[in-house]
Amino acid sequence: MSLFEHLGEFRRRLIYVLIVLIIGMIIGLLLADPAYNYLMKQEPVNGMSLHAFSLWDGIGMYMKFALVIALVLVLPFAAYQLWGFVKPALRLKEQRATLLYVPFVLIMFLIGLAFSYFVVFPLAFNFTTDVAKHLNLEETYGIMQYFSFMFNILIPISLLFELPIAIMFLTKLRILNPQRLRKMRRLSYFILIFIGVVVTPPDFVSDSLVAIPLILLYEVSVILSSMVYRKQQAADKAWEEEFEEEYEN
Image 1: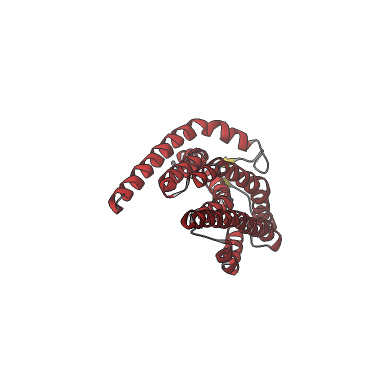
Image 2: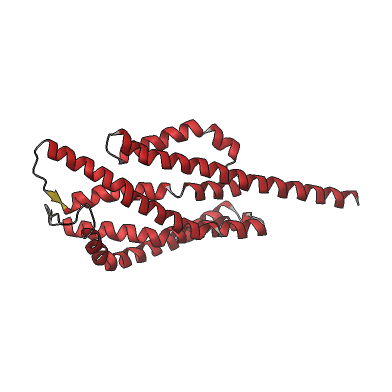
C-alpha cells in the first residue's frame, strides 16, 4: 500500500472508533442515572447534599458519566482497530499473539478504575475535607465540582493502567525493547511520580499510594517486554537457521 492508502486506512478506522465513541456516549447517558444513584449511596458522599451552581451542572454531570462509560466500550474496540491497522505488517503468529492483548485492554482499565475509586479517591477526598474542617469552613459542594474532582483522578490513573499492554504491543511491533525501557527508567519514574503528585493531595502517604503502584506497573511492563523480546529473538534465530539450511542445500 502507498502512503496515501495507509492514511486512508487509518482514517477509516479512526472514523469507526469515533462512531463507537458516540454510541458509547449514548449508552452512557442511558446508564448515567443508575451509576449516579449507586455512587451517591457510597462513601464518602453518602448522606452529603450536592448542589447545582449553574443551569448546566446537571447536564455536565450526565456527560461526565457518559464519557467514562463510553471509554469502557471504546478502548477495547480502539485497540482492535489498531491491531487491524498494523496486522498486515505482522507474521501470522504475531497477529494471533497481539490479538490476545485486546481483551486485556478492558481488564486493565477496569482494574485501574477500581484502584483509583476505592483507594486513591477516598484519600484525596478525605484530605481536602479535613483541611476544610481545620479551617472551620462550611462544606458546600457542587455536583460538578464533586464529580470533576472524582473523574480527574479516576480517568488518568485508569488509562495509566494500560501501560503494560501498550509496552507489550510496541515491543511486539519492535518499536520498543527492554534495553530501551531500562535506559528510560529514570525519566519514566519522574513522569509517573509527577502524575501521582498531581492527581493526589500534597501529602507523602497519598503520593506514595499512587506513585508506587505506577512504578511497579512500569517494572512489570519491562519484565513483560523482556519476555516478548526473548521470544522474538528465539523466533528470529530459528528462522535464520532454517534459512541457512535451505541456502546450503
